[in-house]
Length: 436
Image (cartoon, rainbow, N blue to C red):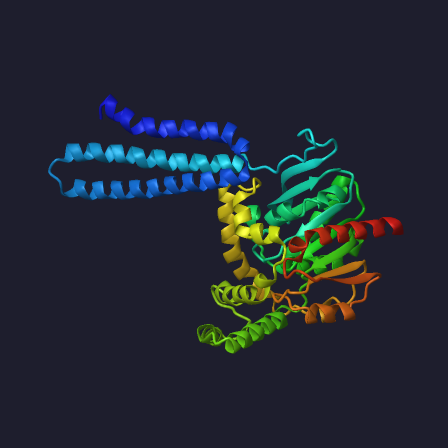
């Protein structure tokens, strides 16, 4: 291969590498996360398609080399195409690695654009239960009370929604969003996906945060699946928490899912949706097990949201920006490998954990919690219909308890009515301060 041929094959990827370096080191922060996400999706698509095309070209040339008589010329083409393949794979690797290396949570700034004195905004890796897991820590004043947020799921991270809709919490709290094992940035930590391990992680993390920020107790907030491990952690170690706040509080997973099944089936029959009636009849009522239980659950929960909740979303910001996957694609805390992890967690971690929840019934197993408890429900939440958590609240014994219903929201009430949730959390913190 002559010098001109080498330049022909190596100059384009070298130019692309230079462009990527300028983009990641200079331009990326200037254009903002939303524009960067769109641009990077296109660039990734081009790189992936180029790699696939280069693989096919190499394969075709190899086959041709076997049967051709002009082997020197074909071998030369093979060498050039191998260079294209290797260089494109290296570019793709560089692209993903750069996005991971530059993942960050933006500084909390004042009116002049400078970081607020005494604020904290960090993306951190910690060890919980011997496994590397990630935290997003944000607050305008590092001396404010700590609030630990437990995402719903299992297998999901709701960090992007909290970052988008709950920034007001950063005024009154140091907000810690935990990327749970098997989810989002912590997806590689999948060695022990049991409810007991998640609960132990919450307790270990609460102790870690209390020691780090010099606080005897912190606030614990769970959403949906996060309320299951939240209740279990609060039950085991109430001394670690000022209060427990359960939003979309889960109580009995199996009973809830069967109620959803009946609601969706009745609605489908009444509206003549015979195709979905047949789908539900085929898969039967929950629980679902097997190799991929997320598929029947996704059909059921997706139709529930479409029928009962989506029409009742009143907040325009949430209607426009509330899609969890689209928000995840834009959040600067994630690199592109993290985004792949996020999607994998939705599938594989759910399959591992959700079947373990079929015996849960907090009306029997957690009827007493030795700390203040606040249960927050959305009036239009049919993913967790209110009769079951309301019955739990009536039975619950706690030093102080309150049931709060957000009238204009569903399962995502803390984002659909974010302002009301922020006021509630500020009032809870004020009440705790008054007690002390």
